[in-house]
Structure formats: C-alpha cells, structure tokens
Image (cartoon, rainbow, N blue to C red; front, side):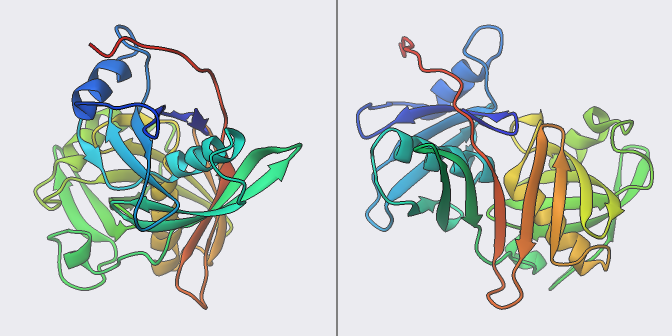
Length: 274
C-alpha cells in the first residue's frame, strides 16, 4: 500500500510471525532483489490501543512513527474486516494516534490522523542546536550553511525553508549529510520547503533510514508547525509533496496536529521469508 507514493509492505501480524523484521525489511525493500518499498510495517495486536503499528525503514532501522503508513493501516484493518469502527486508536513508538476514516462505497478512501501535539523543545526532538523552541538555527554541512527548525511530530525532523525551487535543489547531496549531522543524536528526517503562500507549502524530504521518498506524513506536519512558528503560514495549509497533497491543521484549541490524506492498496502477495 502507499500514501501519496510513500510505499510500505504490510504484514498482518495477527496471522503471521516475523522472526527478524529488521532483516526482512532490508531485504524486501530492495527494489531490484526484493519487493521494493520504503520499508516494512507490521499490523499487530496492542494492549493499549485497537491496533499496533511496528515499522522498519528500508535500511532495517526501526522508526517511531509514519503518518502515511498509519493511514494505510487504517485502510487495511477496516477494508479487511479487522474492525467495523471508523475511528480507531493506533499504538506507535511515537505515541498513540487516533485514525478517523473517511469511507466511500464501503472502503476507506482517506484518513484524518490525530498526530497529537508536536514536541517543540530541542531537548525533546532531540536536537543540540539550542534549548527550548529553536527557530531557523544555523547549521553547516559540506559546503553550505542552512537555517533549520527542529520539530518532533512522532519522530525527529529538521525543516529548512529555501528560496530556490525545491525541485532543483540537490537533495541527494545535502539530505544524507543533514540526516546524520551531529546536531541530531538520533538522526533526523530533513524537509526542504518552498512557501508558495501562507496556505500552500511545497516540500521534498530526505527520510531517515530511507532516503528520498515521494511523501512523508510526519514531515508534512513538521513543515506546517515550523512554517507557523516562523511566521510563514497559518494553522491550516495544503502541503504539496512529490506524490501528492496532504491537508494539515495545527489545532489551536487542542494543540494537536491533524493530517488528512489518501491511502491506496496496490497488491497482495506471498514471499519466502527464509
């Protein structure tokens, strides 16, 4: 399944047992020798929520949260009859998320995800570029200096606003260097953003553990939050990614970020896990 081209392989862990999901993620994510994906997601039982999402990036590292994957989990559990509820809770390493399903013709077409409140203090991202809320901190990498705003929306992000078009920016050069920058002790997802208007943001992403992906749900939420903090956007905006658009809102009353977007089924299959 995929959310705006951010594609993962999903395994029903209610029925299947995966001995080494990290190794399996690395093998199956290979787009030449495996299935091809941005990572692996186990849909599993939970003792604290309706379901649990256990996710691994394409390099085998475990991720805390994936917004696009959470929407696909909602589609899977509803469309496959694991639940008849249209609002479910999802346990992740980034906290419990609430998934509101939008049903059309008996199937999930889109999902509004309550991502919870973003963590803004550097200590909670984690980021070593200061203390408390830090906006547009100077960060040097390779031959260039950037201004970066750290935000945690389930996992760590660094948001960089660019004047040059993101489509022409060399994300393959600067993305991996920023992901592994010493300022981010747990590494980070890096978003490069053009502000098209206060209600429309264009982003590309270098995802921690996966590289360039067509979309990043938690990243789109971090972009909205960072843009608002920096006075570049309001609390609602369409975030345009390589794979499509998400509609995000940073709700003032609750402090929670809500992300709405599609979830798409591609195919079922069987694979030899040996």
